[in-house]
Amino acid sequence: MGFVRSSLFFICFFILLILCAIEGAKKRNVLLIIADDAGFETDVYNNSAIRTPHLHALAQRSLVFRNAFTSVSSCSPSRSAILTGLPQHQNGMYGLHQDVHHFNSFDGVMSLPLLLSQAGIRTGIIGKKHVGPQTVYPFDFAHTEENSSVLQVGRNITKIKLLVRQFLQAKDDRPFFLYVAFHDPHRCGHSQPQYGVFCEKFGNGESGMGWIPDWKPEHYTPEQVQVPYFIPDTPAARADLAAQYTTVSRLDQGIGLVLKELQDAGFENDTLVIYSSDNGIPFPNGRTNLYWSGTAEPMLVSSPEHPQRWAQVSQSFVSLLDITPTVLDWFSIPYPEYSIFRTQQPVQLSGKSLLPALTSEQPWSTVYASQGHHEVTMYYPMRAVQQGSYRLIHNLNFKMPFPIDQDFYISPTFQDLLSRTQSGQPTHWFKTLQSYYYRDRWELYDIRADPSEIRNLASDPAYGETLQHLKAQLLKWQWATSDPWVCAPDGVLESKLTPQCRPLFNGLG
Image (tube, rainbow, N blue to C red; front, side, top):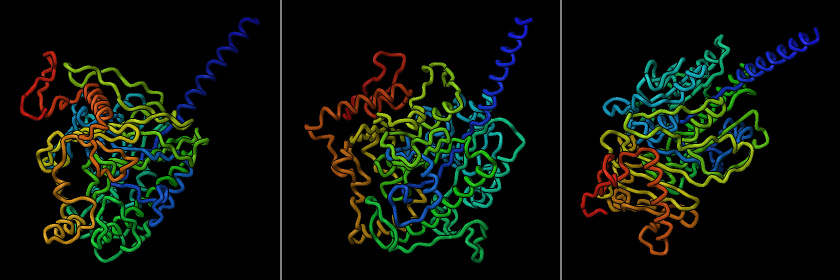
């Protein structure tokens, strides 16, 4: 009888452990918030000209990363990298997804929402999706530009709030991954000019602008803004930035509403919250560039299980490629072994989980970037690596002028820059259009000594060893991530031959 009682006790204890484990698993969720073309327009990153109280409050519960970077400075490619953990050249999203651009990830890619769904995690997306195909990026709950107006699901913060509430109040006990992809503060002068250059008038209650009940518009004068070093300090650029600030404040208020819904639904203490943006801001030297100004991103990571690093600042180098491995780690889901193409090596994530940084500072000091297109006409492949204070950029098509995208082209800032250049007036910019369009094949900068990335050290013999080291690091990463451009521009990749890079003798080597 004693043996039976003892056995029953251990069986009951074992069942209790399993139930506790299941209950614990249910209480782990993820909320990923991605802004659209946002930068450091917040006091969290020392911009005192703009008020962002909700980002400030989130930062008080987060680890704030000072060296966070996108792996590509373009919308769809960056979002594909966020949702796969693979750079654009590896997942196939070489450029923008919509309309004539029509880029898609490869059919065989195992994306984050796909892996989470297979593991029993409920997935949701609200806002700007901008990736495809649907079979690679499936979500259980989806309100995006694919089935709604992107203005409504991406900028109408009342609509976003209600959709978040609908998702969180669903009668579903599974852990969840909710991706809220704001469309603010993206430009809209190219697509919806009636709402202003940044859609700063959308929903403000004025005639024809509609009304967003939860939004209290905040307006800034051109004199109030802080002009980053890479933007011309002109009246036109200042007015452009002032309009951007208004949409950043709408983004901030929207984040506050989303986090309030999370709290009211009882998930605040169960949910990992990550905030970042997809690429640099849409100004000269920003988005579509692999300079610091085009790739540096805000990143806040808030874990209810790691309060010891709340409100602290990390100098560790992190990448948007780290988001997928971080989320998988949070849910204890292993990354599968598979190949995108039968002839390729198995896929391996080049990013890492950020969870160790929530416990202690990590010695991470290297990030990589890869760009192919933005719009379909903007073919300008680049690869980059930053290690410590040194950034190396490889411009593969360096003999061609750097391309300009449509919505940036018609922006007040760029039109003013064009006009001043044509008329010979001072541009108040740190570059000329000629130097911006035409770049050296290799660009090497010491960010610490030259934060504006003005002095190219690639041809300086004193930095020869640094140049060769970074070239080797970049090449190693390209091979590891199955980069089809690994031999370009002076060779052709022939995977069945040895060596695989076959020379073209085109004078570029």
